[in-house]
Length: 370
Ligand SMILES: [Zn+2]
Image 1 (cartoon, rainbow, N blue to C red):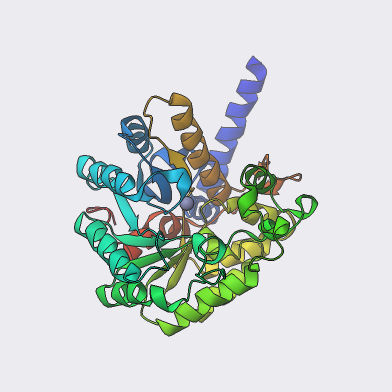
Image 2: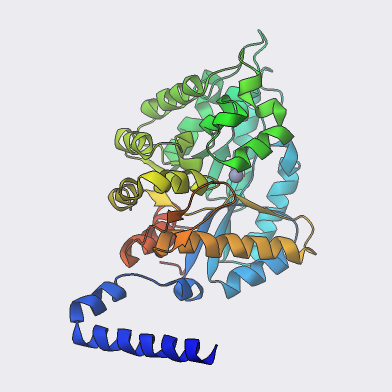
């Protein structure tokens, strides 16, 4: 044991010598962060769902230098929208500069006259309380039905007053449209194991079981028609624009819509999957689109603030993702069968993905953060 430590020390000394003798190697090291730099660098998790007082979570975020965006969502699993708005606005007031939030609107009563007006009013209320963006959820395309029984697509004219208002007021629309492609595949063909778990628990969203429902491509085509019709709308295509299985498709989406960014929330596993076989290609994607990609986890917390385990799991996710993006370590994931290596992105790219792009997209979100 002692001799191992000694030889490690010798190795470290040798490495320091080499760096001193080789300025190029020293510069290369400066161009990358290390695993240990995690706690030193200010970061943004641009996709969380945080409810209740959340003091324990925020204490961890402060220790880890993480700022975050909590996103309200019209989902039955997340509580009523007024409740979510109350919690998010309270978090922002109690932790200014640390927590920002995005509001949302309810699809309830969609087929009734006056729905659009009510939705815009709901959005106005969220903006008045400090929301920096507005989320539209996958219920458009997958759940909400018209009076004739057909699924309402994201480019429905009744959503138009929302889109044009957000475009006019320069408010970011966060769009979670459709699902990962795994949702339309049998369990045996799914890319990440976590997806199989989610769809076993949420069979109503498992499209493979419902072949009569809209296809992945149909929903995304409707989203893209909406974006083409609103060329000035700032759009945060969360979950890698639901094109997570192929970085080439995400690239084509970003090329087509210059006002769109993507976040990688809950889809880092699919990037790691691609990194198993095509690490250079995934890394080239990060480098090429370094100004358009936001870090985010999709981690949920609360409303109970008495759950140290939940805090520990989120803290572990933040560290694990940092390791994947920053180091070139060989890594394993419970979602995947094979090993993959970290992306070893340069510092300048890490700073953009972890902070600068989020600050540029949401300039009012975290005052003082650059
Ligand atoms: Zn989410």
